[in-house]
Amino acid sequence: MLLPYLNKDVIEAGCDEAGRGCLAGAVYAAAVILPVDFQNEMLNDSKQLTERQRYLLREVIEKEAVAWAVGVVTPEEIDQINILNASFLAMHRAIDQLKVRPEHLLIDGNRFKKYGNLPHTTVVKGDGKYLSIAAASILAKTYRDDYMNGLHQEHPFYDWDKNKGYPTPKHRAAIREHGATPYHRMTFNLLGEDPQLSFDF
Image (cartoon, rainbow, N blue to C red; front, side, top):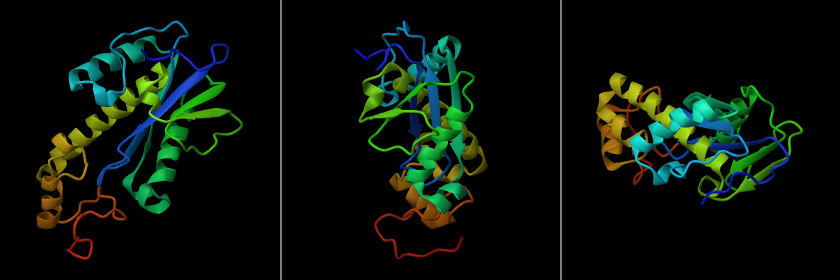
């Protein structure tokens, strides 16, 4: 059973990101403030849910949350500042857009770059422990999936509608055959087993 909050008496926002380990595409993050009495038995870490469950829950979260927002950091920005900083920046951009200002942040993971003067708590595997982080994981995941499905229409060779930019054998084989796209993260090891192998972009 996921916990409804860490601190009942403050306005808490849960934050999580999606797409950190991908070879292509932006990294997405979400911030969600849920009502203190929010309950939903299906809500869990997005990785434990089916695609259909995630999209059903997205509707519930967007309807019932006190506030929610999604932040995005582009592949170009990821290459400039590295993926860890990009993940923090995506969370900051999500928090920036919240219609209600949180008083405390619950962050999935073990590291975070402080947001202004707001206190925060990092929670390892927090998306399986706190409802607000689980809700953020679902929004980040589904909005990023929508984005990658759109990019798949533009570049169908890479199987992004299925792998969402993660380093599958088919994705890497397509990079070898067709080269990288403007959406690939050029600072990542795109080819995997043989980083010395070069190709024309």
